Length: 311
Image 1 (tube, rainbow, N blue to C red):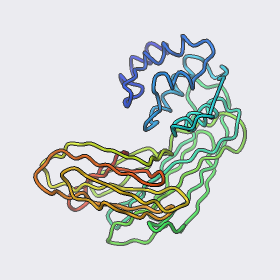
Image 2 (image 1 turned 180 degrees about the horizontal axis):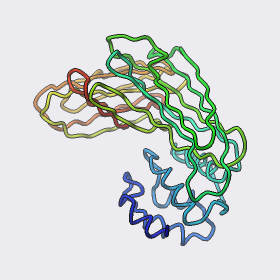
Image 3 (image 1 turned 45 degrees about the horizontal axis):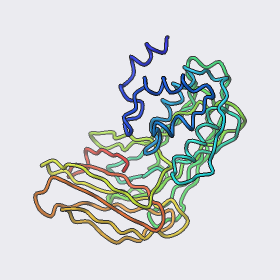
Image 4 (image 1 turned 90 degrees about the vertical axis):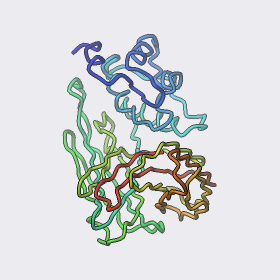
């Protein structure tokens, strides 16, 4: 299939956060003789926020340049933004020249009515002729107080996938419990890692809400949304992936939330946003001494329907 036809069949944007189209990315790739993917992504502001576009960047790069093309001038000296390290790991992942372990955060919810699943695959694009390699998935499950309760390891061969119900490793309760699950992918040898980004999804009685794992966190988080007039419940899920306590100060315009939190190292916390008056605008802000990862969750009163997104 030609590149033009492939682009035509895709969504309009390669990166929704920065509103960069597939066509604009293609032009940038073709006009860069040195194939400096890092510079191209930086100039276009790609993968600077959620990094969900990285699998599509990979797909387009291989289609346009081919997998034998070299990627040069990779720099990680400026660590002002977390995405630089993500991008460096991603370039290593493309070239297959280094053994790079890639980490991801997974916000786990568990109760008798909510299950959290992990899904990851080692699929190879159809246009690839290079042999893929087996890699290992390692999971560390931490309680909300940061205590490690489970470690799991699994090898995933090329063209195989893995699906795990994480509830199988924690107690079943009526209350909703939070856990932080650290997901690490480690190649077993040098070569192409045909891995899609690990996804997790919350299974409830009437819904399945899916999201990819991420390795980014921030000291300052801000989130703006317009609430509807339904009886839905709104939550902020916070993860502290670091090895020290996170002291978090949060504020919310027009809504009541817990404003001062201490989240243990490797711990997590779920706070519910409650209406103060009949306002539709919701602005959430938080600052902390160490980077944390936040997610936004909407659920109906009985948690039979649920959705999730990252902040």
